[in-house]
Image 1: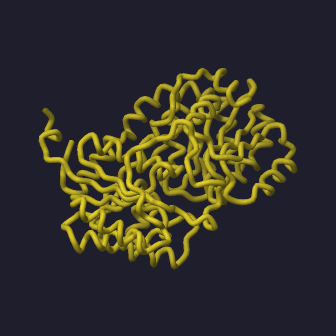
Image 2: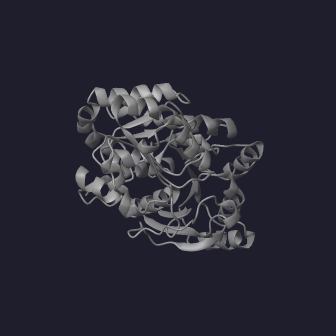
Length: 386
């Protein structure tokens, strides 16, 4: 029997989105609930309404995958209804949790999270832990920092996933109890063992070299710099680009950029949210995944690529250089630099780097394990499991 198994279980209450909501935070929260339940008692409080429709830029907030990631949760929190925050606070307090773990990614939710945690704090001796995906949002304002400061005032400890986010936290809260643990791999997508040819057949791709940009499109993702690099990339390598993800901004400027650059035949847009069961085909069909971000704290896209043994080319922003080992699992290039992106992609193909990087991914999957994340959380709350 291990030392961890002999310790009394903790009662965790997770507050954040999970199924039926879609997207990275929902996936993360659900996957964490499953992992925590291996050692502890877990209760999850979900949203009854995540974003008001007029604030959500995509087509739907709900996961329409054929194979959704699910774990039990109670849908109580309406992000714009304070009465539900109060009800959720009393609900959580009645569960007598040892730890309330809040998924933090945007100050829009600060009033709801603060209210829930304040009620719990008044009724129970409960440790409150914020797990930060973005300490501050990508497009920030003074109001965002004000709301974050209020929410963070109720927390006992924080887990961040990049050095940049730790620095951001230190600018908002003095002397926080904080641990840094990298974003774990997204290892829950269906892995049917498709060959490259089978994957390409499923997505309608040919035999050409194929670059993948994956995830919803917003200005900070830097897609325009990858598109600017495509004429040189296509000319020198013959590679095509697959842009897979829903536009959260107008798509016309990007389509016009491709038209003007003369690489219409080498760029394909898949403007929609991709269901869980489709993810394998897009990654397996591709040679390399490019994240040309202008800003970032960390990214789940890198962790999907690692799961599918795909090299990545990322910009040196936020925590991306912390999870991509230069020349081992990918390349790191300067941000907002189309020439640097082009040179990295050309070097990737000319140097035969796909085969040279492939043996390293098994070790990377161990490095970014969910077990490691759970151990970091346990350490923050003083449980001290292995």
